[in-house]
Image 1 (spheres, one colour):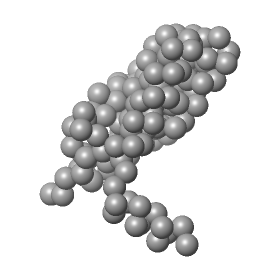
Image 2 (cartoon, helix red, strand yellow):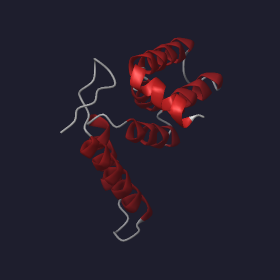
Image 3 (cartoon, helix red, strand yellow):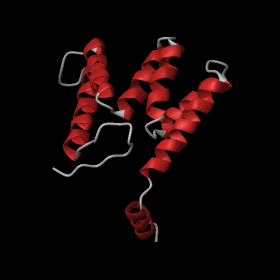
Length: 137
């Protein structure tokens, strides 16, 4: 099974694991919306938490949004901080928005920005640059 890493600080990821994250996100939506299953927001959150613990940045993004909607801004920023440091731009932008609203500190936004930039730097490789040039013709 081919191994790919995006950061020396994170666990290796495998293509099947990415598919698992997609399935977890789908199951989460089904439980939240009650489509095909009985609506159960708590169960949907559990699925998201499991995927987040396994390193899925989109799950962190969604959990952060859920916490913000519930008024738990501190926990929302924590979720988004983790996913921003994994290279998730949406999470970085959410922290920026919270900072602009006075719900996150300048230090939190600066930490998220630095972590995001580090994740992007760590993801650079000659092969990615060649592929990027090829697809952006």
